[in-house]
Length: 129
Image 1: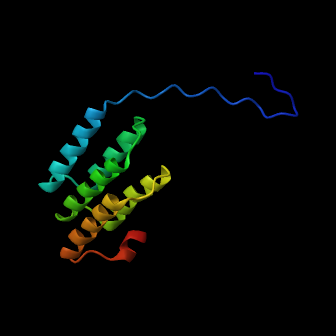
Image 2: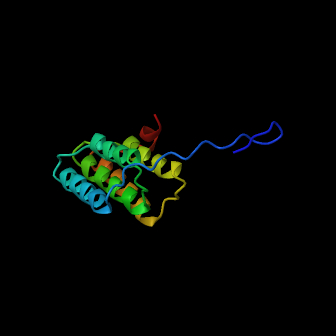
Image 3: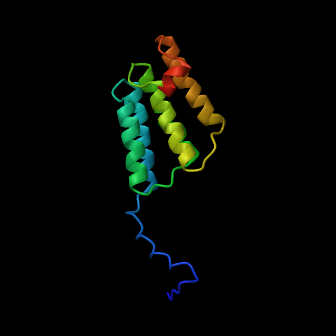
């Protein structure tokens, strides 16, 4: 590209695409996480690690992926393995991607609140410490 002082400098070349991740692998990892969380063998760190893995590998997350992550948070919360703050981190990642929560996302967030309330641990102010 030719560049002169009166115009914008040329854009850098695009980054090479990240390793393609098979959708089946993403689905399998999400299902495994949810299954482990339901048995009390996964916690919020596992949820956030999977979220990081997906974003680091260029997975284009969809609302259903965030719903699955939040449902895993809710399952982990039943065993004391997740807090409302953890669920809010998933919501913030959703917002950072420019997505808007839909009904299943909000229902999953309510499941987290319900699981925490059952254990006497749900306070909205806890999410924003």
